Image 1 (spheres, rainbow, N blue to C red):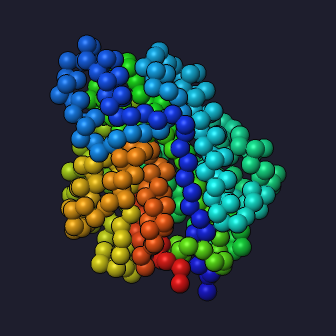
Image 2: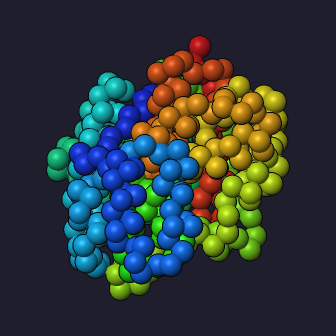
Length: 350
């Protein structure tokens, strides 16, 4: 019988610059209001998003200057490698292992282009072995942290005793665009922050929780819901359909189907740990999953403190749940480009 894959640790990291939401709103008004006639109608997102502050790899003035691919890429590479090292070091220390003990690294990031990929750029600072297996993953967006955890757990299952490090790093603030006079761009400016999260997994060892099952659901004809446009200035956000109503209508059947493939039901879940894409998304998830309004408290608190950091955000929620005491079964969920729902079920260690 296969040995269970155990989650040995979860750790998070954020960059040094703090963007207060009121300051971003003021800067956005200065940058957009004279050129985008619908700005005031959209500007309410800065106050109703549930976000108080975010962290960024650069100070606020950087984002409201002229930026192209070289500027954004430089900031991405510097900031993402620093965050990778910070989060990975914390996770390894918490698990009681060193970087030289790591057999496989899964690196998830969709907010910049790095070739060589981030784990290779961080290798010398971390002290990874020359024979470490590298698995960089791009394009999963907000679902990346949960999907990355799933990928890492399957790799750990395939090689019992191997230590697998999963790191999700996103520099979402580099998608801020003064040249994009669209509602989607204003919303992105109000929501996105930077951050990283890391997990250590291994089969047949003690840990915080066992990875019980995982799965995904991708809806057909939904490529327009979320993603990137790529142009000479950088990434431009795609939000062509409202995500909260879509989530409210579709997430419960999708999650029920994922659980059903493992012989579980929605009623078997003690705590849903959800990616908090925004305050309206969190409320929609509570309604969709028949949860009492306000029960996703860690999600709202992470959103208030850090904003939407894309892939790592769900793992920030998981870290708070671990600190508070994991329930018996936690279902980690996130939605991302595809449009896809990703789930990982965690059973608390005895």
